[in-house]
Image (cartoon, rainbow, N blue to C red; front, side):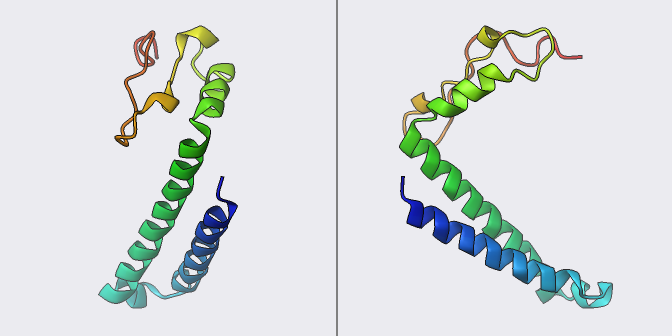
Amino acid sequence: MDKLLIKERLTLIDSYCNELENIKDLSYEEFANSRNSAAAESYLRRSLEAVFDIGRHILAKTGGGGVVCRIQEHCPWPGRTKSDIRFPIGNAGGNGRLPKPTGTSLLSNRR
């Protein structure tokens, strides 16, 4: 795993959060100025992109195996067992899309 890449993305997120802290102190009138609100939107979007970059990197390097185990061990849906939920994330195939879950639908018995 490339720890430098992760550290760089975390540094970016920290700097964007600092900029957002400065923007939050503006009055409504100052914030409503199209440049300030556009800047806030940009910092939020860039922060999310950095978070997604980190997640993609971790999944690419680990194959997602750890994610599958944790989801199955900590099933949040009442009445479901570990075997009801399978997310084969490591089999996404490089196209950037997750495969459809196998097994019982997660939404079928939710109240």
